[in-house]
Length: 121
Image 1 (tube, one colour):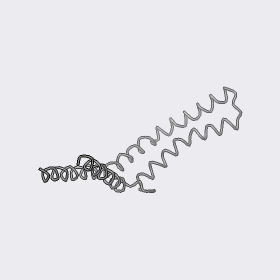
Image 2 (image 1 turned 180 degrees about the vertical axis):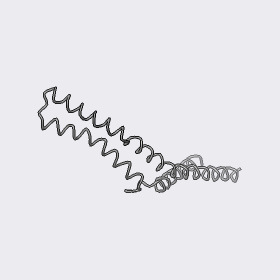
Image 3 (image 1 turned 135 degrees about the horizontal axis):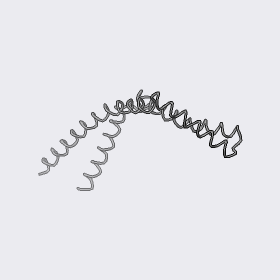
Image 4 (image 1 turned 135 degrees about the vertical axis):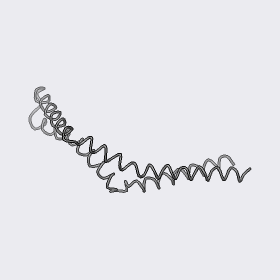
């Protein structure tokens, strides 16, 4: 009975490895697609319109010029920071590579499975 359980757990781990392998390959492609759709020419044009509208609303509300400009710059920086994070994820910078994510997930799942086995025993 114990050998059967061990075989099932090994099979589960192998299936998990396959899933993680696919995920680690697909995540960078998904991020690239998101970048392409979020930062297209049309989206850039819409972002410019949104920033102009934001600035205009601040000015019409009586916000001083310097404050309105800084707030608009901060508003735009949200989009550019998001772009930088996505680009780093795709390039693998700062340990955001799909393989490393997969390895870390696998490690943590193995730890949880080990904990669960200990609890069952």
